Length: 458
Image (cartoon, rainbow, N blue to C red; front, side):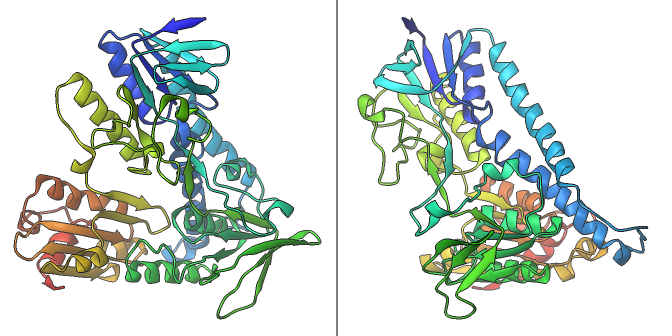
């Protein structure tokens, strides 16, 4: 049976439900399809549950440090992983149920549960149902990449998704991948009490960041007795009794790492390979990401792609901004564009990294005249008072226009303080605006004007 709608939305990740709400409020008859868990990656296996676990790990870490603050804890400190998981599940579950309930009670919106596949550029099948609409929005997200690696089929391994089911403490967790996901889980489980080894194929951790950021994060991890192996160019796996062996080709160190559990954190891939996109004529790139223009339109008129599946951002905040761009263009006659947004994100190791705009390395490659400011967190009073003075902050500005080009704050509160800088960047105001601002003392943000008063040629 064919059912006619004004709009079909495939996926209930960050962009989908909000767009359904806007379109339905505008009087459109909307169908939204979800094949598994409402809320997508952020709600179920990404931001919300992992940051809940990070909070538990931070509590354990601070409990161990209690004596540093003059606080005595009687008896042994322990971590109950079942309770950690229960807390995480409760927080994540509340968000998931909230999204599902909202959509199922939304006027002018019909929810279909099942796998959506294109039958043509205007028709989608969901089980026995056939849905047609002149507007179709793809919001299918992504999943952990599992590349072909020798011996991987011989072992059991975890991904960021299956880690959500862990309610025990791995004796020795080997994390394959030294980037954002791997580092967060690695530090988290070290604080829970696991031995942790991080294996990275590249010459340093988080290679997209500047070298000083990578070095500082390495030092942070090593201070917590996390083993880090870099330049592990040839990685293979095997079983040896009850243990899993990761074989590494490194210039230094042992050629094998034996552990009890392996987490693969080697990147993400879009959920576009089983949508029937070829039947609709929707173009994808060599990595499977849907090709979109600056307003998120695909190669087929009447079809848009939002969120992680379009390759234009891999974050909850960029997915939500995708919704805003689509809604503004369709409903508000406001020509918003993807190219208007500034790159910004956080890395939730502790202390966290807040990033905005270009890296120092990227600015240097442009050849433009620039100024740079840098300040260690040991010279930030708020960080010292909290006993959390690892890391540093830095900022790069255009020497001629005085506009801020990029910034990084690796330190306590860095994920929040970075927004002081980000908002000035969106305003396209000179750095002197924030340099002359009076911030609250004692905070991390108050040292941003001080840092801007000490700029040097890049």
